[in-house]
Image 1 (cartoon, helix red, strand yellow):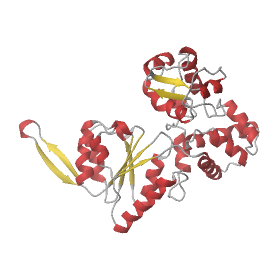
Image 2 (tube, rainbow, N blue to C red; image 1 turned 90 degrees about the horizontal axis):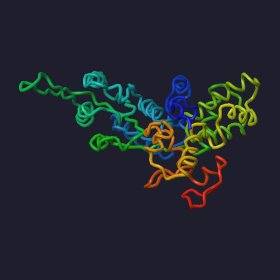
Image 3 (cartoon, rainbow, N blue to C red; image 1 turned 90 degrees about the vertical axis):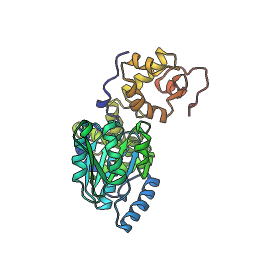
Length: 346
């Protein structure tokens, strides 16, 4: 079986792609009222933000975690807007030197927010500088080298760090403990995705009927970024091929052309499942063997492909490895194995 294609180019990947930058900003809600879905998180945030504003204080440091494309960056901007605060954006890999972090922190005004995406990728040296900054709002600077080196402490304005990560387990315990609020953003309900699509269609001035909205929502992998990307691609297809309202039949036609099946799987997902079924008799198969068979990195399988496939019950994660479920066999048109599965067919 040929190698799986680059996950960064997949239409249904939750990660940010180059084409997403403009559309994400244009469709991004600015207030909690405009933010659709994640009701429990919004309820807790509303209390949290209202209390901080009532006291006239910046909010505590916030850690957001969840799969790519679920709205962590959007939520960070919503928090900044609700607090009337300026927000500066960076990422863990971008902070390579202590001087980079020191320059950013020293430029923050009282109440400003520093959003650090992929915070789990901060190197340890940067992380250690961040501890006193988050806890004491101070920056420890080492002057000189060797026996004559000394440390001076510079006071910082009171600011807030919002960290975002897809891998909470990779954050060190000392860093996690310095966040006052930790919020898990989960996959969205299909009804919420439908409402997000309806809002996006209005903002993009796209005419789409109710049935087509439901069909797109059902294939969006419960992920807003994927939903908006599919809407954009279907809009382009209909404009070129038909120049009319996006109806359910036209949406089906467009999605078939894009190779997105009724469960929201693309060719990469189907080939990954097919490898488990055909080459490993449905599993269990270890990640190393699966990686070698598909020429895909272990981290990509674990972080990009697996979450949704497990969410919809197509893969089981067992102590001995990954297994394809009865539902996976049926979806790909294979005869189901004569063994029980954790996710029996619906």
